[in-house]
Length: 98
Image (cartoon, rainbow, N blue to C red; front, side, top):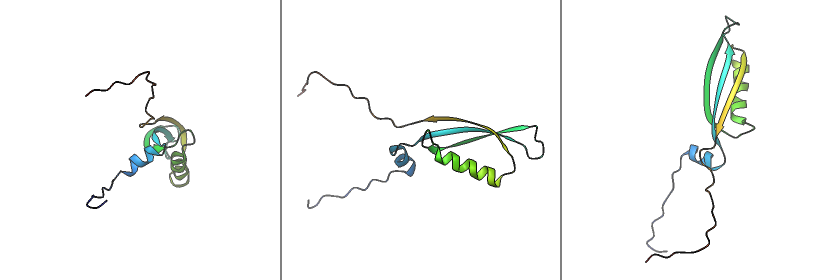
């Protein structure tokens, strides 16, 4: 093609991850305060991750247990794929509009 312009798509990394099957994961992390072990503190973590394995969340929790002082009590996870396959419905006929 002569004279045709080349268009370049600049998709965000978040969009590309969603197209690869990642969904938005939200975790409520309860942990014990280092100086007051009987008290619990809440931390909300959110990132794109793959359910049900959650490798990104597991990596974060591994970091938490190695580097942070507050021991984990519990983790609740919610996950939603924001981009889903389109619904397909068979049609029995064809209509043309002029």
